[in-house]
Length: 274
Ligand code: G3P
Ligand code: CA
Image (cartoon, rainbow, N blue to C red; front, side):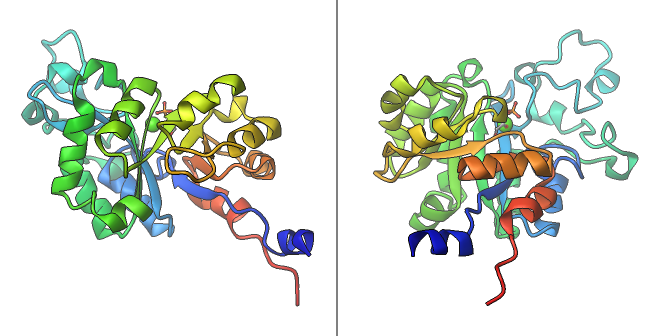
C-alpha cells in the first residue's frame, strides 16, 4: 500500500526562483521577483549585502560592475565593491540594462523594498547572507530588518522564510539569535560532519554537481535544528532532465533560474487516471 501511494503521489520538490526568476528578468531586482510571481512561483531566492553607509541591499556579486552601469556612472572610481558605495550612490545605478533594454532603469533594491514586494506578491523568501565575513553583524541587522517588516511573526517564520549562507558561522549565528527561524547551509559537508551542522541548520543545500541519492539519504536520516528531518535544496538546476534526476534522488527543493520550466518538469506530474 505504501508503494502504491508513493506512485500516486510522486515526490515533488519545491521550486525556488534563483535571484528571482533570473532567466526572465535582471537578477535580484523587483522585476525578477515579479517575474517569478507572474509564473505562479511563490519561493524566491536572493542575496543580501551591506553598503558603505550600513544599508542592506540585494546584490549577488560583492562588486557592482557585472549587473549595473556603475563604471559609467562613476568613471573616476577604480574599485566597484558594494561596501565602498553609499545607498544614495547605488540608487543612481541602472541594474536592468545589462540584462535587456526592456528593463532599463531597474534599481538595486534595498532589503526593505524587496521584502515589501515579496509580501505584496504573497511570496516566500529563501534569503542568502552573501559573503557575511565582509559585513560583521549582518545576521543581527538582517533579523532586525525582517522583524520591522513583520517577517518574524509566527506565520512567516513557520511558512515563508529560510535564511541560508555558505558561511557555517553565519548560519550558526542566525540560528542562535533567532532559534525559531529556519536556516540552510550552502555546501556539501562530508557525511561524517553532518550531525554537527544539524545542530544549527534545517537544510543542507548542495550544488547539483555534488548531490547523489546516497548523500540525500544521509541528510534525510538526520533531524535538523527544529527536530524535523534535515532537508536538501539543490542549486542551480536550469534543465528539465537534470531536475528529474535530482527529484528522483529525493531532494526537497530545486533552486533554478527557470522556475516555470523546472516546476512543470517535476512539480506537477500528471496523476494516473482513476
Ligand atoms: O541559493 C543557492 C545559490 O544561490 C548559491 O549560489 O552563487 O548563486 O549565490 P549563488
Ligand atoms: Ca544566492
